[in-house]
Length: 164
Image (cartoon, rainbow, N blue to C red; front, side):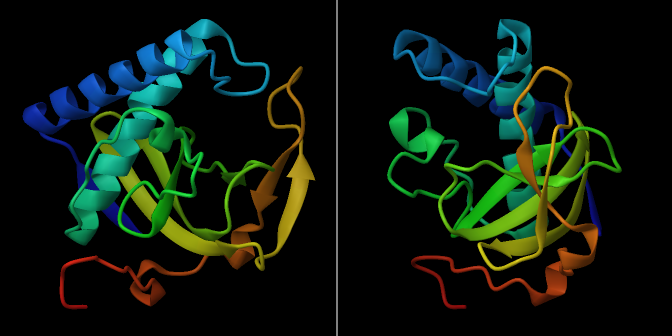
């Protein structure tokens, strides 16, 4: 596990990207999360952007903070380098994969602005999962089994334009 604290400037950057993503989603009628309220959607975009930035900071990767259709993985783009970042707010929460998510490497980040923990990663499909309703009233999601989360030291990050 890697602990990360975002600075004032990093928080401002992540919040700005999260707000821009939510505005884009609203103006393009993109659905955020099944059964989520409007307030949850704003929070998810802001905290999610901060989780991506925390992972980038922890691994020394560039974070482009992309906004627009590509930010919603419509063409298989990843969040940071070749990695999909998934934020779960409870520290003991699950790494969640949505049925429409593209195959790839998924990193499990927990926490809230400004404190985050990079818990580990899994490759999906291929890792052990289970379906669960984590929030009453929402559809079941795919959760990666805690025993399938691998240590960060084993993650191969592809950094285009950099020597690996």
